[in-house]
Length: 295
Image (cartoon, rainbow, N blue to C red; front, side, top):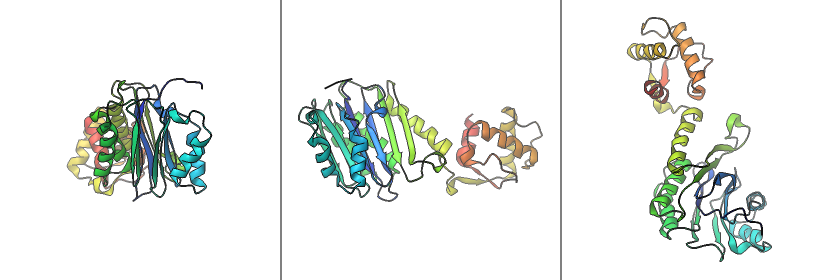
């Protein structure tokens, strides 16, 4: 068996029963864990493959799920002819929320998993069993969170409980949704990785918030009316940013609109303010306004 290194890891595979979103969150004392562990396909399932990871388990497992096999049967098929199955660890959730987790007898302690409806948690070379237990409990305790926040909340709880006994290095978050990727051309709704960082889960949370800022669409509840006072504030911000040279009139005229479009395009905020807007708007996204005020 060729060994590049042990993917000493804790991971959670999950499903949102309300939206059908599927995903994986993982942390490891291993460089670039996101390139090895998480696999998912919208409408099919999600898989984490780790320990002495067999990366063929990802695409093969998803193909078996797509063929109609339940997660436990998929695990049996994947490990049946693998001579190193005793050193593998796998978690699976399918599109119906059925789950399964496998920990080979040769995985380094502490190693084990826990499953339930819509989730599978597993880890190896852990400080303690509470790492997996608290990860599962945190996922169960937050059913109202969107899947991405729920997965990272569970991952942080695992780290707080003990985590990988070798320490921290990398983390990743993958969430799939039908046509949810950039431009609607694939299913990778969220695909974020922290490859080498002293606190990778915290860093992953930070870049997730950037992902939401840049790529999530406006929530109607966050739309604020553009009053004259607010327009004057925006004109002042645009002036300091170098995009607007007119007076602070409190009117969203053509010059203000052109300046706002230039600002939004430069800051990659197009999803929350179309940069080709041609008519004076009546509202602004609170998230955009907060960004402008902060920057």
